Length: 457
Image (tube, rainbow, N blue to C red; front, side, top):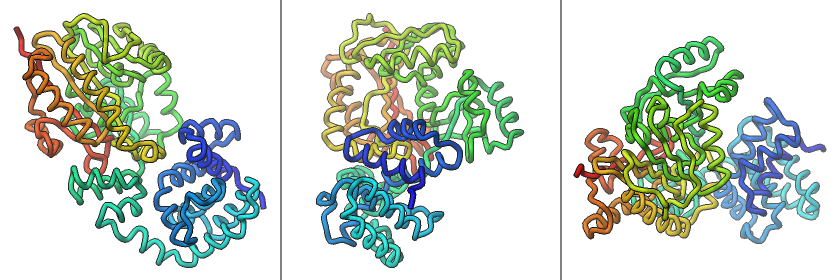
């Protein structure tokens, strides 16, 4: 029987992701364009693709339980077809069992692994027959890091790290949130524009509402879409009326609190979302210097500035650990490279790309970048350190190391603002003067935010 295009694409992207190291989102977009998928077919393909990639951990545990074989011993196309088939059987209610099984069998035949078609058929049919027992065994217990890693489809090292750093209850909630739909949020240019756009989009039947929180955020400049985004939203993004941005990301700039006429440095700024927000908050009066090492991402910053019709943005390609810039900036934002563990709901393959080695590698870069950023601040200036991750090594430990460098005279004097006193519900459990946003609790990207000030001379 022919394989439906959405399943064929999901199978292709699964193989690209796990066999060739491709990025799921990039591979999906390219494949959908090549196949001309649109509307319901594209939406179905994305659900199958992203869901199968996210749920690889649970599916692999099911495969090993049902087959008695280690997943690493299976041919790659066989593993991909089983992951897709099990996702449909266990997590996608709209798919009839026979379709999920038959299509998975066809996929291994198309992939020239027909010798395994009987094996795939037997495993998936058994999964369908024993679904209640299987889901109970795999999903019914998340009381330990080991069982939670299977139930919520996460790497075991991540479950153990969050268990140790945040406690069992918070760790379980965070792991569960990684499989929930990510926030769909847009930022308007200003309060007046937001009010007009909300009225217009609601008139078109779009379920949209002004944002609230997590930081005491100016909700008039932010919108959240609860359902479909509508046909006009891409046009509004294109002409600069709306900018896709999570509320957690927007909160970073709210804490920075840029003012008209200031000179502001935005480090690791690609793709320029926060740069645009900063310049708009400054009413495009003053100067924003955006620094980005990657050439393509630096080009994206320039494109963002053009889209928003901003004239006070200067893009500089450079390494933030050794910038040839003079000190004297009123405000500096270092949104540092990180392990991205606060974004797992929106990046289906990210959890499988990270490791403790990732954290150690970026922590070294963060430490150097943070010390350099502190040296560029003017007396009386403000420094924001932010990441989109939930990792003590990359967050609270980096602030502690910076303050130790201050005490040793290695960087100019800095004082840590007590952000937790302004937003107690968001305070980090490890350093209450800093903030740790969480996807499970705050329903947005998991950003860490610290604010430091250099005393005036």
